Image 1 (cartoon, rainbow, N blue to C red):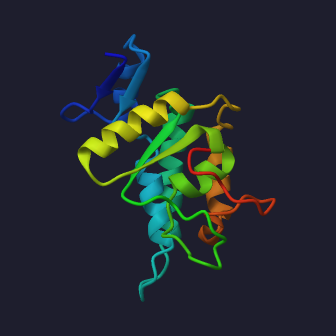
Image 2: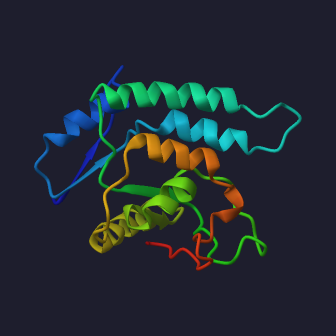
Length: 175
């Protein structure tokens, strides 16, 4: 009863879903829509190893679209990002294992570790229990920087740094 799940409606975009979710009075509102999803997908595709050229232009196009939407006041970033994963991200240094590039666990988590939580489980019941545990352990931290700073951070973030902070310390799982 303390957790509400909001899914996008038919033909509803992420900013509209977030606005609809803002009117819910439940203590926790999980929104299954992300205004940064297209930016995240293009950022991750830039790091795919293939014969095709990197798709920096697609990332910049999506970044421009989301920035225009944000500047028009169509959305604000959610309080927290809750990432569902089948495996916990490695806490070891990147030289031990280089994780798959992930926008949420990379640039976003590097900016605000307390605002990105990870639930590592593959079974539905384990995910539900992990979500409740994660919600109960969310810590306060600084709010997100303005979206242009988030995008700039993604432009300069190297995925090999996924398991390390800039000071060299490892990033905790539930930051």
